Length: 264
Figure 1 (tube, rainbow, N blue to C red):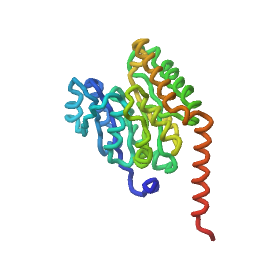
Figure 2: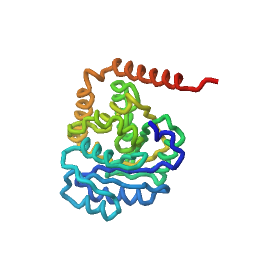
Figure 3: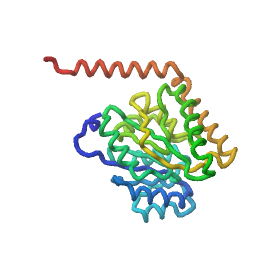
Figure 4: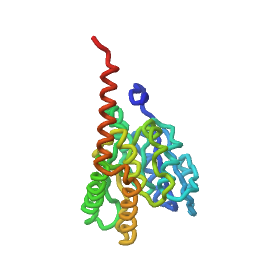
């Protein structure tokens, strides 16, 4: 990918899919306006909202695009397709990024040109204060433990991720953007991680809502979506075939770089 070795500053697009979440979106956009390193553009994807989410985004200076296809996978992919920055950062409407979130992501990508995507941690910003830390650890830890055996590498967390636009363009025709019952971040990790490197960035701090735990039904729905996301990639993406393909590809890339290296 040619733009992995750019010398000029990396430009940034922030993508936010939203549906009927106007109040939380206003808070999120305010936090983005206070970043130590501002985004070059903010792209809000309105996924058939019936409230004033789109108008709030416009008033905050975001570029608002409609997505009539239902579901976060379609909305997220619409935003990634429309993004013009060298880096595409993604968070949800109910997220609250730390003031240095964008700067931390940009610095990490600049320092590690071999990495195509970073994913970061999150903490809960609502719900019972005594449970916020422990539940966040359990929730994200369980997600990682369940995902890594299926992926063979780190998953991506949709509330806190960044990727190079060149990497998205490389895999965008392979993602399952038309299935609203999938976890879009896990699906993205399946396709992105096989061709590119994903790394964890612990300093990219993000706050998020405790909505996954507001009801047993909502949590169960998330679990079903996670299972469905794994199953739709079978049998072609079952381990160990997936890891073998990844190792083969990276071996070919290494061999190619050796052949291209000048002799002295």
